[in-house]
Amino acid sequence: MLNPGPTVAEILASHESGSGAPTSTAARVADAIAARGADGTWITPVPRERLIAAAAEIERRPGARTLPLYGVPFGVKDSIDVAGWPTTLACPDYAYTATDTAPAVRRLLDAGALFVGKTNLDQFATGLNGTRTPYPVPRSVFGGDLISGGSSSGSALAVALGQVPFCVATDTAGSGRVPAALNGIVGWKPSRGLISTVGLVPACRSLDCLTLMASRIEDLDRVFEVIAAPDPDDPWSRARGPRYDGARLRIGLPPESDLEFFGDEVYRRAHLAIRARLGGVGADRVPVSLRPFLDAGELLYQGPWVAERLVEFGDFLAERPDSILPVIREILTGGYRFDAVAVFRAQQRLQELRAIVARVWSEVDVVVVPTIGTTFTVDQVLADPIATNTVLGHYTHFGNLLDLTAVAVPMGVAADGRPVSAMVFGPALADDTVLAAAARLLDEPRPTGARTDVRLVQKEQR
Image 1: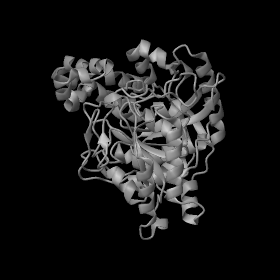
Image 2: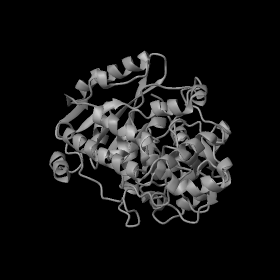
Image 3: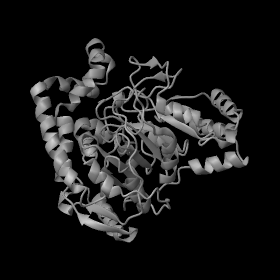
Image 4: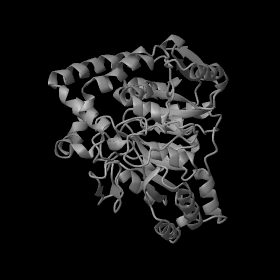
């Protein structure tokens, strides 16, 4: 795994002790961004002088050193509003200047965090590969012309490059997990509704999540304590679930025959090596079928949910079709082929699959699969953009349809040097348990929360 840069905890310790300061951190971040140039990470970074001035303002706040994120720099995916800054969705003709700040971002700012800028993305947050942008196409930090992953491409790079210790991104079909996997960092999609999506330009409003990217589970925990809160203005908002109680984990593992690596033997061997090590993390391994999860995932782009994007972008598509990248335009127009009958048929099928999956959680606490089954170069994606994108979402598309919580966990590199990532997922509101399992995979110490009977609460929720 990479060593991206100072963590949230390290930056806080420096600022609180006085050995460092938000202004010096701001200068370091600005210099790091400038040194990379137009590499596709940022669309709108805060200019150096303004960033240092913002850091100085944080330093002057009463009780500044007691703020939970005192001077910690962070980036925001450019589909989330920050007042006074453009929201582009990687489409210049769609761009507008936000008048309000998304409540989730406002909570971070109130906690003393330092906004560094807006990060690149696949246009309209549509894609998992990072190449669908009119701005410079980002590449993975692992080189070899490897794609960065998307749609939260710039957010993953900003963390992997050590420019910021965390970013706020989104995940509808894997947009927070796939780029994390391709850049060797942690990408967590909490249960839908735990982080307010007010101020997010939606891709599919019924599925969208705000997500967090960092290099450690500890950093995710710190930021989540600040950013998570019920929001009466978000109709999908809900309170967080029980804390992990320290009980022995039951990890579900699909049979090898359920796993797909698309002919990538190097990746197959790398993931099977990860599975072989799971017995040493203090958990029981339980066989589970991946079939109902994959069947649900196929509904996302082969079913009517693609039409939900037209709720937000249909008028712009009709009025300014040439302003949209051809591959995005093709995806959006594909939504017109669905009618009301198709919507209800898909909803009924999804409900059947949800009932099957619900029974899985009586047997296991979490499931571990690859985050991605293979990788692609930029040229490979550009040559076949739809098919390669579908492959990238093989293990992630079902996450929000089935109301799961999931985290991509960096697990080193394969024999050929490409990044390897495992995904841990569990049922809605089992976020703390999923993070506990991820921390064990990383051999990262993590304190146990309140002694709540997680399995009993999950049973009652079902």
